[in-house]
Amino acid sequence: MALEKRFINKVKEESGSLSVVIIGLFVITTASLMVMTDIATIMVAKRSLAQATEAAAQSGVHALDKSAYYQGKGTMLTAPLAIATKRDHPDIPIDCEIGGTEVILELKSWSNDSSNMKLRQLKDIQLTSFECDGRNLQIQTRSEVELPFKVPFSSTTSVFLQASAGVTNQVQEGFYLFGVRIR
Image (cartoon, rainbow, N blue to C red; front, side):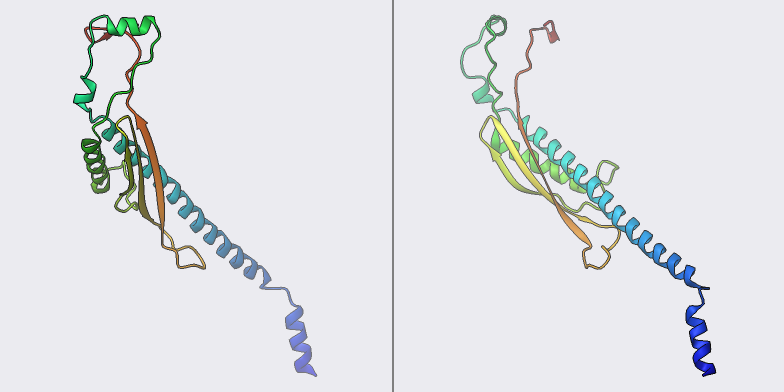
């Protein structure tokens, strides 16, 4: 009977119950911080991949198709007449073959870059889609990002991200005299 009484008194005793709560809250806080750090890493990596994709698309769109660009007749009055009649300028033609090479070179540059422009957890950037019709260029990229912490209660250590960009090279409106924009 005395043994039962001591056991019941020990169970009813409240000393030490606060340490269990503190340990539980510590575990929850630590897990939450790990998850938030992983989410922040994914967001920064997504922005870094988007910057690389946009830079590659811009690099590719600047590949001028000279034969298409210089066809037709133009005079000194072509640009002022286009402004006066509010005629739209045609898009600048893109050499898709050279543009594709420029896109790949820019993505390789971003993949091999160790500066602060690229998130270090972002692995090789892959070109997954390239579409060019001579006027517009659209690309899609994919990369894997290593997470700083393993996601609690799972085996996830990395995530795949995708980004896309589409660009058109257009003539800037205005009248230029000796390289200086007048209007």
